[in-house]
Length: 129
Image (cartoon, rainbow, N blue to C red; front, side, top):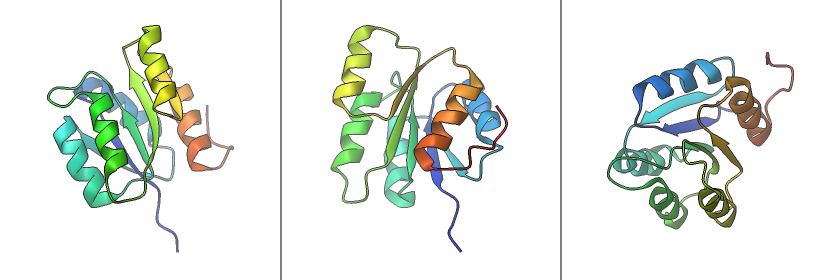
């Protein structure tokens, strides 16, 4: 039996993480939380997740630096959804250069995040909107 895909949400705002958790609850996934870049790197190394939901403005290690370090690890590189308040075109361009799968701006529509995660992980399309 195949285990549920593992997702790490890297988000320093507890309220936003709560919304992410409620948004992804209908999906057959295991969701883990890291509030800092340092926590995220440790979780990625230990869990080898299939997907990261990554905030850019993090305390400590910046989100783009977290992504760079994750990609340098000796483990499969997870897919990435950037979920950030950074709406500047420069950050969207960085996202494209970093080959992220999705770039979603806060405030976000929960259905958009759920559908993006479902699509990236190849989950059923019959989930509620």
